[in-house]
Image 1 (tube, one colour):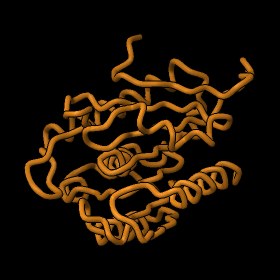
Image 2 (cartoon, helix red, strand yellow):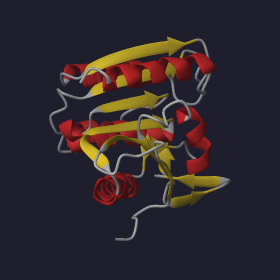
Image 3 (cartoon, helix red, strand yellow):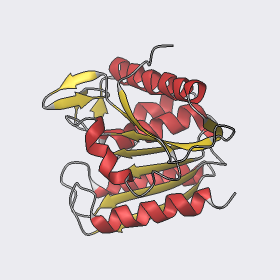
Image 4 (cartoon, one colour):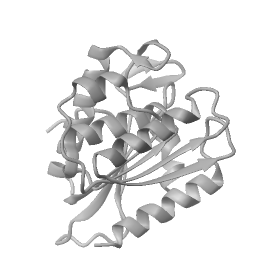
Amino acid sequence: MNAPMTYEVRKPTNIDPNKEYPALFLLHGIGSNERDMLSLADDLENHFFIFSIRGHLSQQPGYAFFTIQGYGKPHREVFDQGINQVNNFIDYAVEQYQVDSNFLYLLGFSQGAIVSMATGLTLGNRIKGIVALSGYIPAFVKEEYAIQPVDRVSLFISHGEFDNILPYEWGIESYKYYSGLGSQVTFKAYQEGHLVSPVNKQDFTKWLLDDLNKN
């Protein structure tokens, strides 16, 4: 089976052929690529199969998962296609690798955070946890998508208070939206702009490992 998207994979060391492992799917920001995200997960490689996915659209100097028609407004058809592509890739990874389908996590920054939160709403409780760094949920996703139950999904949502690309308030809106659907949400604010600080990385890494060890 051919992969539906280009990706890089990092496997745990000393894999037990009789065991399945949690999976972490990394989704990059606009104009970036799959390699840029791997440094955010370098402390997690012994705990997960890590799949860093490349957006399927060319967007200089890298790639994107969707295009935008205005501030906070993705092109709907392109966005829908991107979400479907990511959903298909998750199915591919579960089928082709020693992945435990009960422990699927998404980690995205900026556009990747937007895709992660929208994907979580379409797959619902199939997803175990989401790390959404500096993103938002498009209005049409909330209003028109077939939202699945997410009461067993845990989230770590963070946003920079001085973000001049995607407003800080949008991060709070995402926190409130998922909380209102019954998800367990941790929200963290940082005195930063549109970036992932070392403290932010440290916090979400601890959160991921703690969430994984709850079970």
